[in-house]
Length: 258
Length: 258
Image: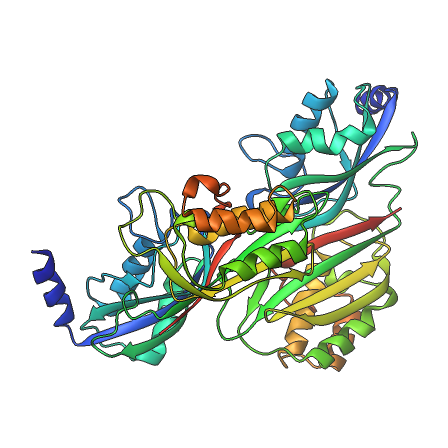
């Protein structure tokens, strides 16, 4: 039944892709939920259905958890709706709440899948450090009172670059798939307003992988874990050796490459 | 009765001042409201009462409207509570929600009034410009799709520097007081993320004055009003000549000088 339904969807004339940004604060993650729980997908599908005059089923590059934000989530859907592609962003944005914005829309090849065609993703993670928390970034960054050692954190991040088995940073209960991922870039930089910005760019990510890495790297920055111990944790392939998952609110899906 | 009550408050042993930051999104402005409406003052007074074991009545440097934010609102209150001053921020912050933070606390002279002793204030106003709105700043900046002319806006801002009658930018229904204020600094700068930041620093501000100035300066930036016309509007002393009030969400009370 399910695959029949999928064929029916693919029989529609157009495969439309969107780049979407959202503030995840008010939503129960990206992935569609049963009412009254509201996810970003519920809101997007409802508004797109109005614009396209069609039932809409989105596929996304990946889920984001409750409270996680996005600058460049990518989704696609099949439709027979006739609205010209260049009018899509304005039309949808006029119906969407302020915290979800369609940044771009394009006609994709019929084989394009926002989920399966993704080649790489970039995540950003923000931490605010300082003697007092900033209430204006409370829902947009992880707050840490103590000073974090930038060079030690960068040394730990250097260790995740390349192809590795990331089982130590994989959430329990994820789908059974290979735990090997390749990280092309991993860096931490200082930003104005006592903000630290981590950027991690790789060919794919296990469930909670970025937040588990950040949680452990932060403990390196606080001197609770040495860089050598970080390497051991990574090599242990054991989630119990790593630190607690960093809070969702600091995480941003920055971009997806196809 | 009222002044008797004031005397009773001033008879208390300590006059404590706080510097407070808040995200105004969830509140009906700063000034105390009757339940179920919640203002920042309601929340602060309730939590301070727990810490000080005393009923608390705050005076603030000024109100901020619903949706307006603050990095450096200053308040004071009289109390017989005995908690050491250096423990106040941590103690209160442990009870406050994430969107209100006490940044500093100090013992003030008995004559100090956060409202009446204020000598100058700085406001910041943020505008996001660009072809697509950023959902992550929707509640923290005014969004404008079109490009704003920076040098024309700065030329208009230069006109408000110095002592002027600001009746043209004064909200109807404000308290009857002199409409003359002195502006020491007024500038607009480009910030990362397509953000424009206006800074206005002066010895005092009429009700809605900053937002009315920004609303009119933005129309100069969009080419709807010339810089010469801006000067005429200011000189007209007539609120009806100026543009609509800029949205509350872009405004921040940055600091108060005593």
